Amino acid sequence: MKNISILVFLNFLCFSSSAFCSVEDGLTAYSKKNYTLAVKEFEKSSDRGDVQAIHYLASMYYQGYGVKKNLAKSAALFTQSANQNYAPSLSNLAVMYSKGEGVKRDMEKSWEYQIKAAQVGDAQSQFNLGQMYRKGEYVQQSFPKALLWYLKSAEQFHTPAYNEIGLLYAQGLGIKKDFIIGYAWIYLAAESGNSEGLCCINM
Image 1: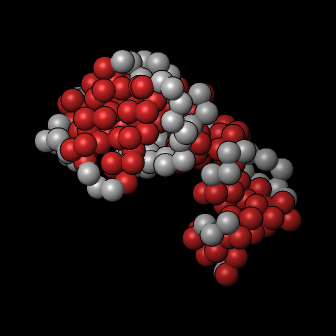
Image 2 (image 1 turned 90 degrees about the horizontal axis):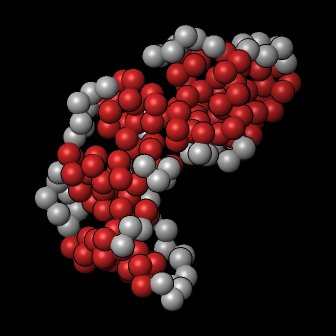
């Protein structure tokens, strides 16, 4: 699973909404490593219910940037934004429940959040589900289901999924064996800079 990190987007336009401006100002402050100011700006918007601001504030508490590190507070904030089906927060909660960070370790809840995140379109979560089904981790192993989730992730240009799809085709797992299609996916992964794809191509 991915490590949690704050998602920094610096190309937002500042509309008339003061809440939106506070989020943008917070991201700008974060990019300049002025974490205390970033927290203040995120708090302004989160108090107004801005889902992105709540997510960013949760990330600050997770990392201990601009505030004292508090995993329980982070989990509570991620839950608040996850309840609004915000995919990054759903994905992060899946990680936190799997590791017992700020919450009691609960693989069933982790799985639930992972599925929700994947269903609302989080590419990393879709890839993670593919991995779980391929390896049979916490679920019954199913190569067809693994392929399904890899393909959904690949549709969003998540390059690690390219290599996994290629390997399934090359080995005939969950799909009719087709080395040419498999190689094409692995080559695409390598061309996209994926290290595993590069490794497979160079073998």
